[in-house]
Image 1: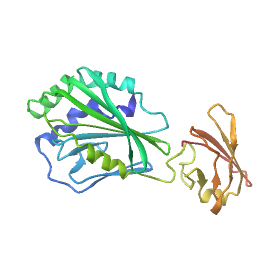
Image 2: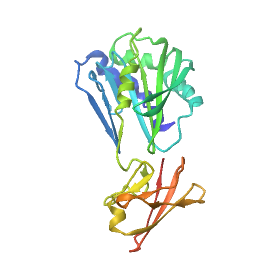
Image 3: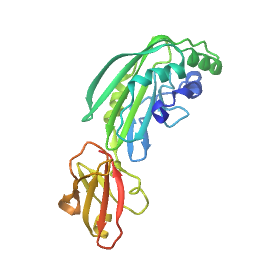
Image 4: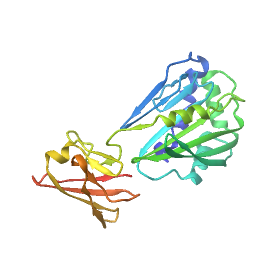
Length: 262
């Protein structure tokens, strides 16, 4: 499960200060990662971790963010079991759906639980408050975008709390990706200006090394095809919904090989 587990194993320690000392309304919270950023609405702020945000100190909702390079979506069948093991209680999949948010198709899966004894015990021990999470639910949003899989999960800590779905969806709509978001392995090394967007490969490195061929292969090593010249020194990549391995051939012999996620 790894990063996709969204750090809820340590949630009790993260919410401690937020529950005891709620923060006043804060300005919008910008979260930046490697080649991406998104902004949460006013009232949200980090709570002891850059990957966890809380609304008004966590009292009005908590959300966790995971961003994993790749194209493989979460295994929903195993998510419920993971949450059961890490938070305690019996957790099952409930409703699900898809929404168009910020021009991207975003999936969501809601889970319901009878209780969360492990998490309740940890929060109670660290805050001195009697917390007993029972008969509730939480939601997980997930989407693919330019070589990343983003997963945002949120839940309410206090009984009867209103789930801030609209706030999290608003944050997703602000998702911005850097030019190199889909390029992995070699191209992120310093001094190589490359980008992939809208099916095209570009950047000053291509011009400075006089690239004359761009060959694209699938994960089995089979040739998908060769890129063709595009305006402003870019190259149009062959259409593919899967990861591609790209080999650049240059006039000066400084070839480059790397992978690109759609």
